[in-house]
Length: 101
Image 1 (tube, rainbow, N blue to C red):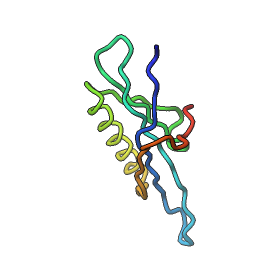
Image 2: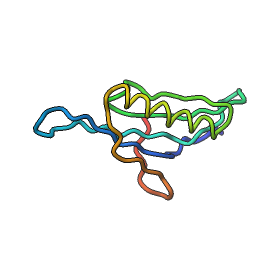
Image 3: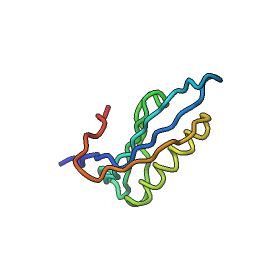
Image 4: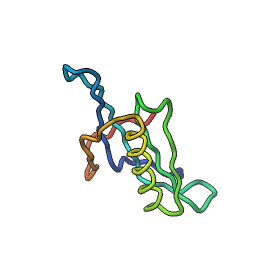
C-alpha cells in the first residue's frame, strides 16, 4: 500500500505590491513525511501555487529531518522571493486540508 501524504503545516506569506497596500498572498502546505519507496529515507511534499510550478519533494534520513528540511526550504524560498511569513498553522484534526495536485 502506498503511503498517504497528510498535511502537517501551512505557511501564509505576502509581498507588498504597491504603496497603497495591495499585496499578493501565498499559501503553502508541507505534508507529513512518508517513507521513500524502495529506499531507507523519507520525503515531504511541499506545495505552493504561485510560487512553484509543481510540487516539490524534500528528502531526509528520517521523518523528523525531512519535515524540518521541508519547512526550512519553504522559509528560504519565501525569503528569497521577498515574501514575509504572516502565519504558520498546523493540522491537528480532521480539518479540510488543501487538495494535493
